[in-house]
Length: 375
Ligand SMILES: Nc1ncnc2c1ncn2[C@@H]1O[C@H](COP(=O)(O)OP(=O)(O)O)[C@@H](O)[C@H]1O
Ligand SMILES: [Mg+2]
Image 1 (cartoon, helix red, strand yellow):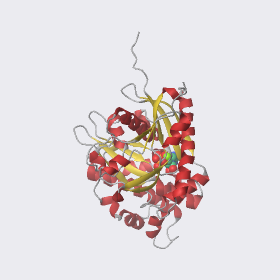
Image 2: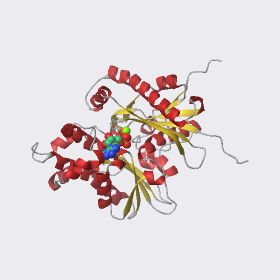
Image 3: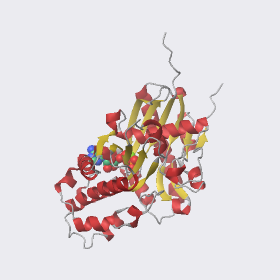
Image 4: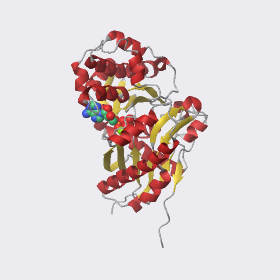
């Protein structure tokens, strides 16, 4: 008779700055490596996306909208969690907790706050499962950026015994985590990734994103525009640092385009793609070793043109999709929040103070217990 540890199943939910939808994962943490049992992706519909985009644009004061959309998101999150649980072939009672990141509509670490919408109490009520949410608040309260939080997960599960590994998440924003044996973990947001690529594609092609980077590939990088984009002081600012739509948006791009229409739209797209690859390469050159593996996750790992540009710009680094390590690119962020929920229930800290700049390790997240089961 073989001895198996009892299952330790968690759900992770992640809906990021790309505003494409929510990714849900069900994973068993009983073994040394997390095992993905099932997953689901639920798209945001156009009105919800428009509301979130409007809320994410700085300057609005939409308290009622924010709380109403929080309840809408709780419905959607419950739907995504239940779909992932069904795909996993487990039951809700087997799930210890849902780790729910929530939807970021404002990220102002310099002012000490960040706002993620999604009513965690309603999510616990709908699913009958404990929900851990509001992961960033304790880190911000301790003087940190509250971001990025995935590096703890990367360090726990994605390090290599000998090779230096850099984990690159290409979501709306690009962030890197440096994992080198015997050295402290480094992690920060490098700059924009899909936020700008998607916005420019939506404006000019009316498509949600530039599939496989084919449109960018049809254009030519404009060196003068690239230089103006790279001139933003964020890129050379030392970490800890994190950013979002408040800074990197179409307005930011337009201010650097000189005369609108002078550069062909496809060339702007090629230049935006080059910007992401170049800023990642610069971040690695400034803060990591000379060679190793660059493991790419997030939806941007599916952008072949971007993967090629990264390989060209990051000399010495073997660029691989996280899928090659057995972790699908879109699984990593929701897995990180499933894991953070587990750390919260165990009373263990989830932040890496060297990454976020917090005064010390903090147990992250607020727990919303499910309603009691009727006896
Ligand atoms: N085949 C593809 N080609 C190019 N880009 C892609 C592809 N698949 C996904 N993406 C990009 O990935 C984004 C979603 O990435 P995701 O990791 O969910 O970001 P976030 O965490 O910010 O929500 C999409 O908006 C799109 O830009
Ligand atoms: Mg997403």
